[in-house]
Length: 440
Image: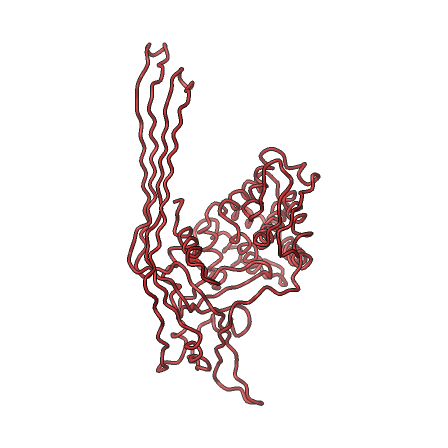
């Protein structure tokens, strides 16, 4: 659907204009982002973010019982609506069978009409949860957090749908006119009309979360002198800003290290990862499911190409100094930063062996502009564009435009945009690792 649940959530965030407000990306997760729900990230890179994965627990479930629960604040309902319709008419000559004329009309309408309300836990009420004891039997995600392996967050503000609704997208195509009939069949002309209608609908249930805010959850041992108490401290932190020391050289070193680790795997293992990833690029949900399983340390059953990658992880035939799971996670997290269009273009680039030229082109953009927080014009290097002719150039420009750069086909000039830095960095990492898999 043109206006999918993901698109609706992004549009709601734009309309609400809330600082640090994040859209929910999948309808299947919409009930898992309510206030107090715990989210987990497993960042493999300093330069792009990993997605928030619900761990299936509320903060209140891991604290000792009989503690007062802060009452949430609930806003008045907020109605939000968006409608859009398109109509295209065209008259064209038809020569497929014989001379004639056909009139075509395409009509599409889509949109949403929802009502949301904000359920939030203000900072003053969150403070009442500080220094609370955790349950003695702690879940594995708590242990991973204490050991610094994962980052945990708590949903402190959620915009929930107040009434169930249906997201609809309808379209119709109508052809009419007269077409000459070939003399081999019969002489004359035929007048006809053809129409096709399609309607897609997605139900959104009451209570579904479309946008949320989070705070980082830090769990520490509480130590006094030489004594360590059997209790943990909960610290709610705001958003973490990007460190100032990060530059392109640091990104290049990080990507080079991961690429080298990938090259140390056997050609058979690299071949399985390559052949499995290629078909998965056309389905973000499969990529997300695989990434989510790895982030939550669940190497269970999975059908299709994702299952083949899990089989490789279970066999564990890697060199002992390489963490294959985190290496695959690094690539998956980079891919998930990219849009569906970019994933499709990447698949075409892999098949056409364009990755190396594209990698050098992206590097030529990032290296001189990485440090600039403002818009600045730049020109693509002609020697890097030369090998990318015809369809290859169109594919490459599409990859760059989807990062947020203003690109025009056959025009080497563009403008650097700070918003493009993270997707460009993820694209650079994806191209580098996929190129290694292609070469294997």
